[in-house]
Image 1 (cartoon, helix red, strand yellow):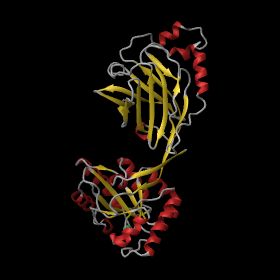
Image 2 (cartoon, protein in one colour):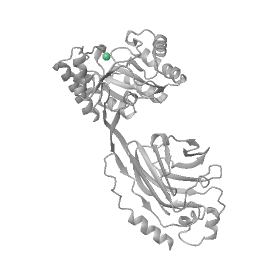
Image 3 (spheres, rainbow, N blue to C red):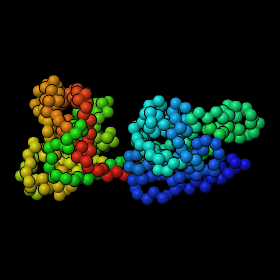
Image 4 (tube, helix red, strand yellow):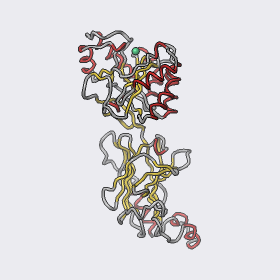
Length: 406
Ligand code: ZN
């Protein structure tokens, strides 16, 4: 009888909840099931996405206590997500070392767990951190109360053999619950596509706020070297900011999109690398056409401008600001364009970098193999000093404009 009720509930929730109105939030409507009783019974679950964060909300019909989710006692609530041909992935919340933790495949996942009410838990985390890809995902949630010693699923199967629906009902007992009780819900991990960023504060900067965050910047691309820079950044797990020359963008649209999708940032470096230091309407036109080329390739409009040669002035700065961009100079310059040798590039950057530092280098405009070879050493040595690499927009505290797309 209970199974018929569960099926009716599932049918009811085939209609997607459309409460989330903002373009930057998808899904998140709650699926509700009838209580089964027992420990850590779940009666409501939801899975949605806000900006880059996946959000999983769990509701029990009793208090969710740290004891019930004690990791050492075997307690956990896990969302199990299946994506196309990949093995299903469990993303679990447990209580461990005095904290709620999100864990997957034996490792802690960066993210946040909150308990808005005693019967609820909310998890938010980024898809990539949890090993999930953009795309459709079938999901269900299962719970196991710590230290609970009720009948096990294997025994349940034996006890109830003969009934046609045995395998579906067998997973439910006083210690273990599953939502939906049978089958799974369909959901999606959306691609968080960045469409812009919002500048604020000073209209020209040469460093970020002091602290342990720093930014790598690469100028004069996109170039044949840029893919190698992206591969190396990906290996190192750090982002960078690429200041691009507008006239090089149209022939490299896919590469420019890859810069953004890999988590790095794009800035404007003029249309043809002219000296714009005196400003004037020609400078505005250089900035405008470059932003138009970047937007046409990616859907993204930059909020950062780097004046070619570092040649700048009040008129240029106000023109870049009028187009929503901050003019960005630098605080560390290894003169890599002179190809002084990989060792020299590394040691200059390391010695000139302080908290909030903006590191100038080049991925275009010449042979950049020394700059590329220097990158992993720079990252390793500065990480060892406690620095964390972020995009320039992150460093400056700018917010991103994000839309979620299939
Ligand atoms: Zn340049």
